[in-house]
Length: 248
Image (cartoon, rainbow, N blue to C red; front, side, top):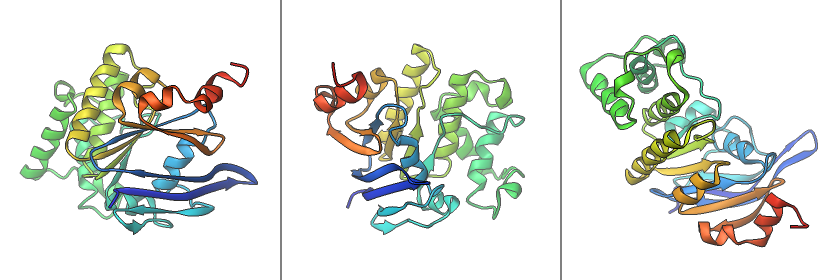
């Protein structure tokens, strides 16, 4: 059974069709890249999977179970974690407490109560492990607002992993990063995948996509126009046309 099955998924906003009959599967321990020009429907797809928007049509199955019409926190507790293009940690909390808040979601009934850091020894140890695996241990006592962007991006992944996901949605994780920071982030994503976690990756940096992903799906105007290995997608005429224009 595939980890995630998206079946004929569609979404309309006031008559504008943002997604049109998109279908694909995502597997455990695999990185699936989702690319396409601006406005192709990539973030809309993430918002449907994570429960932010209800779909207009189609079906989403996670580990064989329908997850449509569930609230975002219910979907995250099913095992789907997510990061956003614009990082939004708790700015006045340090790195450790940011991760503890995410860990606390398993125990507290509301986000407000989860800000009371859950500091049992076993939870502190789990937070320490996540921080170390994300490579941000030297910033553990730093307030999030004082962190460079590359560290904030890795903190976001650590917080998402605190939910113990089976599937991780990453929305443009390398945006705004220098080459060295992108390389460090790619290594972290590979480690996540090696743990058997499935990864869906929206990304505009083609170097990152081609180097990191085992499979790539291409969206254009809400329609899936191609899917395959990086080599297959790179040479697909429809993909070239979508990015460079019909004349090219």
